[in-house]
Image (cartoon, rainbow, N blue to C red; front, top):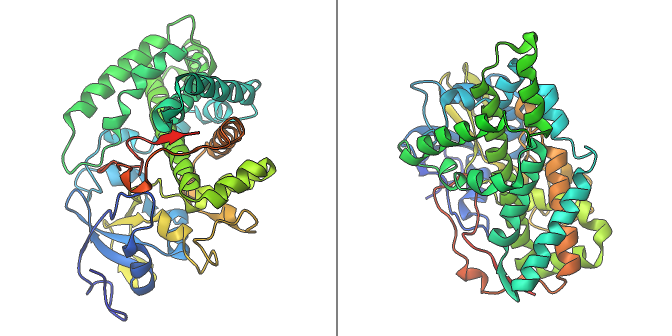
Length: 403
């Protein structure tokens, strides 16, 4: 139920959020609330009330305004978007990394220009396609390609053995749940993964970022860092990185497989895959919930007075499909001059530090898949795709394809 035109945001009926989990179409509520009440009161999974922001300009304002805090969304007593599945102090992960003096090392590891990284990605993409082709002619593209490709990349960046990927990957289905109450398995998995990553600090085979962090333990300047703090960097980078890159890649493929004109364009014009990835970042629906912020003081947001301590949710799909910013927003257009203004990587102080790596990851995957499997298509009707619910990302449980 949406508000009638002219209805004030605080008078509109309370909506349950998030909306549909179906990743093949934009929820009907998005355009309706953006037109009528772009700052709209909603009820979260955890039962708290929050302001949902759905227009591009207002979403960008929230992300860039320091009066809206990510770190404080984890404070005791704060209204919850959903129950935390990680320790509260880890919510502001990049802030913690910066405070510990590790930002430079992390950004260096996330740079796609790191020697050999792009070559490794291309070789890994070909290896996975080889395996799919040998097992084909159908496959679950998410399970056979997207997840192992992303997990492998993060093992490579962290400098831990590729054999570790399945162990850390198995935690993510629980770690990124949106649940109203604490999830028992999340704490169990977190403790197990921290112990495993801590042990890898002393593994002679460890190199890359975790090798660099391990070496800092001999530097008196970093005496404040415990093994657990260093392991937390690795566990959070793997989890957030894999779920984001594999989720986006899966949803980019869903989009191309359900929009064959776009698929054929990128297949036949591989020189357009770079800008194509940017446009896929704009139109994709992989962010299943919204980006949370807590108001640190009273702030005027559009026509609404947001009070100190209230939760604000930035609806990325609302911003990215706002016709005021992106004319004809549902049209896939690799020649838009402002596509890169999308908010899929966030914005402001919490703009994702792995943007270049994420773009390279998706670009190489699409180049290899569309070249090696030019007739790639869904193996089932799109209406038969099963969508995960109660999760931070919209993803299909399986992505059956043929070629």
